Image: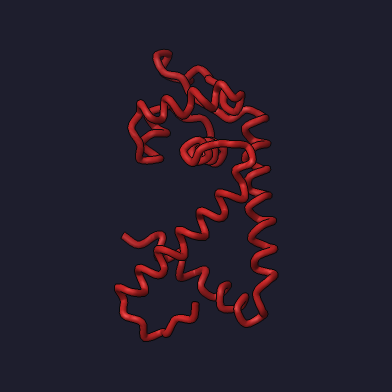
Length: 146
C-alpha cells in the first residue's frame, strides 16, 4: 500500500499500528514451532537477557499479575526450559533461570525470526530496503517515547 507523506496523523497512527501488529504476528508465527505461548516466550527472553529473577520481579518487568507469571513459569519449568535456584540473600524466595534447553530454544527462535526477516527484506528492491533501514531509528524513538 502506498502512503502519502501528507496523510493525516490519525490515519498514519492507524496504519502504523496495523502494520507493526501484522509484522509482529508474522514473526511470532514463523517462530512458534516449539509451541510456546507469547507470555512464555517473553518470560524466557527476559530471563535470558536479565538473568535469574523472582516471580514477582519478572511479573513486574512484564507488567502482568504475579499469579499469571507463576503459571507461565510453572509451564516453562515443566517443559525443562527454566529451573528454580535459591535466592542468594532471602531464603524465602526462589529465582528462576533458563536451563540450557531454554537458552537453546531462545537461540532457535531468534534465528528463525532473523532467517524469515532476512528473506523478506531480500525480496524488497534496493530503494525499499534503504527506506526501511532509514526508518529504524525513528521506530526505536517511537518505542522509547513517554
